[in-house]
Length: 587
Image 1 (tube, rainbow, N blue to C red):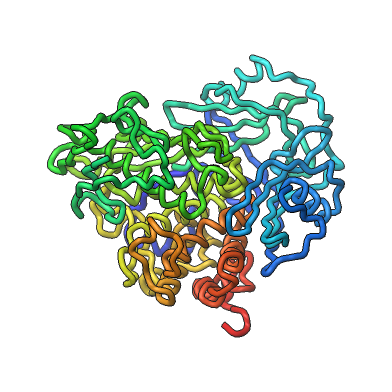
Image 2: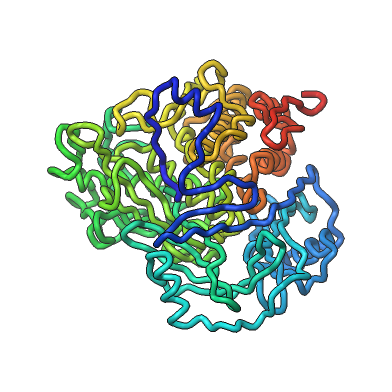
C-alpha cells in the first residue's frame, strides 16, 4: 500500500528508531521477496528475482540496432547480452523520444507464455545501448505450459474469498519464478476491494490451484485554489485564470462545466458527484478553515483544489517526458501511443479512512485512483485536499509506478523499491514548493497534523546536523516511508548543488528547455525512471541518475551528482547498506 504516511513520535524515539527500526507489521524486508498479510488471514510471500543492472556511459555499440525497429533491436540485444535464443524473449513495450533516446521492455518467454517476474529493460541512444537491466532466470525447472486447472468460476471465487475482493474481469496466463528456482504456470487474476481501496493481481498456480504471489497496486477556466507552489491553505488561496497548458492538455482541463476532464475527475463519494462551475468558466469556492471540511462550500473547494493540482502536475510532468507513450494517465491519448482510458479518479474527503492519503496505480489503460482523507487531529478537522504536498506526493506514485518497468505497475514491489517510491513522491512535492534559488529545508504535511515538524522524522536538508540520514540507515529500516526519507533527503542534496551551479527558473513548470538547475533536476528525475531496472535498489537508482545526465547533458553534471550522492554515503563503492564517499577521479 502506497500511502502518504504519518509519524508523530518524539525526537528521542525517532533517534532510537534510526538505530534499530521495528519491522512494519504488514511487510517483511528482503532484497528479492515481499511478504504481506492480506484479505482473510492470507499470507503471501511474493518473490522477485534480483535484477542485474549496467549503465554504459557514452554507450555500447550494438551491431544489431535497426533504425526504426525498436522491437527487433531490443530482442536481439537482450539475446546477445544473455546468450539466449531470441525466441525466448518477448518484447512488451517501448518508445522513442525526440532527443534520440529509445526505451524498451521485454519479458522472458517460454512456449508461448511470458514470465511475469523475469523482465528486462534496455535504453538506446543514437543506436548505442546506454543502460540494461535484467532479471531473467534459468528455465530448466519450469512447469508445463498447458494449465491443468482452467480459470473458471471456482478459481475466481477462491481468489475473491482469499483477498476479500471482487474480480475486475482482467486476467492472463503467465509463468512465475519462485524463490527455489522453480517456475510455476499461473492464472493472473486482478481483484479490487472498493471498501478498503485495495487492488491486487493474484498469481494462482494453474496446476495446483494454490495462490503463489501478488502484485499490490495501491500506493497509500478560473479557479479559486491554493497555487501549487504553496503548501497549505494558511498560505492563502488565489484566483487563477486559465492555468491549463494546452500543449500538455489539448482539450483543456474541464469537460461539461464540472471538475472532470481528460486528465482527472475530482469527486466525493462517486465519480458522478463532482463540482460544477459557480458561474460561467469559473470555479470560485473559497475554503473556510473555521468550519469542518464537510460544511458550507468546503466540499466544492476541496474538489476544485484537488482537480487543479492533479491537472497541474499532469501538465508539467508531460513536458518533462511523462506523456502518452510513457504510460501517463489520460482518458484520451489523442493517437499518441499508450493505452488511454485511464484518467485519475480523485476521491476527495474519502470516507474509507482518516489522517492519510493513498494512490492506486494499475497498469497502463486502467484508471489510477487517489484517495484523500480528512485529518481528525484538530478542531475543526482539516482537509488533506488543502495540503498540496500530499496531493503531489500521491500523484507522483502514478508517475514512478508507470515509468519504472514500462507501464506494468509491477516494478516497485520489493521493500527497498517501494521505499524509493515514497522518496520520489516527497522529492517531487518539494520540487513544486522550492520557490527561489535559495534552497530551504523542506518539511511536509505540517498543516493537517498541526505540527511544524510535519510527518517525517527530519526536515530534508543539506545540513547533516539537521538531517543525519545516510545510505547506511537502510540497514536498520524496514518501513517504506522511513526508507523513503533516506532517498528524499539524498535527492534534496542533489537538487541544492544543481541549483547552486546553474541557477533557478521561475518558469520551470511551463518551459523545460532552460539550463537552470531546477529544470536539469526534474529532467534527470524523470529520465532516470525509464532507465532503471524493475525493482531497483538505491544503487540502481543512483546509477540511473548518472546515466540520465550522460544521455541528456553529456555528463556535464557528473561531479555535482557524484559529490551529492557520496555526501550521504552513496558513493561509487556503496553496497549492502555500507556507506562510501568515493567519487570519480577529477571530482
